[in-house]
Length: 247
Ligand SMILES: N[C@@H](CCC(=O)N[C@@H](CSS)C(=O)NCC(=O)O)C(=O)O
Image: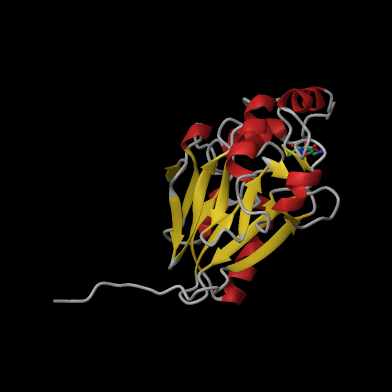
């Protein structure tokens, strides 16, 4: 008889974490890893930053398992397609609800496991129908994609966006996490890197204390943002998780 393979996560041991930034699209990419096994995932990589990411992965000694997308972005092309050509066995991940092609499709309640650590999947539609947020196994942080931004939120005017759905996603799936949970978004346009969820619950000007669903719908109707410059290229590419179209 041979013993099975187990692992122990020491109480309070922090997950390996690195936040990276793409200046061109103001996108945050995250490397998460198990400090003991070095098994790792990358969340929301950007195609033009893949060389930088590979250098980081090498210098940290990580074994990259999955490239996880929070959704099919409209402002840049995901790096998961390019990473597949550079790392044997690397697999792209996106929500089933996105309708995108990927190696692995996931949904609410699923867990993405790397070594003895994991993030759990919450469906947070509204910016797009397929948006997901990812909660660390110890609830110390949440990767909110474009659903909840620091003192803001993702726009809801294309890709199946819905202000009503986003309001509900934030209140039912994100604001129910502890106040101490740290919010790490997919974008920030003002140099902010993180926020305490408790502060967003109180002071987020679109979704915080006192803002009703109808206030929010009105705010979102009046954002008047111009379309992302790369939308026509980025969305079709991201519906294939960045894998080039060979047809
Ligand atoms: N100018 C940028 C696009 C900026 C933008 O629309 N950002 C999105 C997230 S990327 S689709 C958003 O939801 N913004 C919310 C907000 O309140 O700013 C470009 O041309 O790419």
